[in-house]
Length: 74
Image: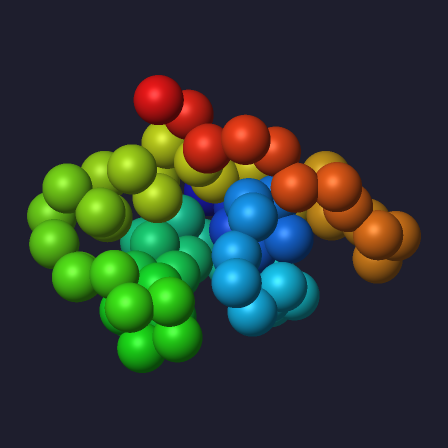
């Protein structure tokens, strides 16, 4: 199975979060949901996990270079 990435730098946040999570898809979605709840104040729901799953990128896309935040999808 391909490794995936959730990169908090991709989205605007009050804390300018820089966390990046890389692993198997289920692991990344679980860790990203826990992070979104504990750090960003989101409720860990099935809907949040679905949205996080849709936001994942291939791990190969990771770069340590600064990343400009994208607007959140409507």
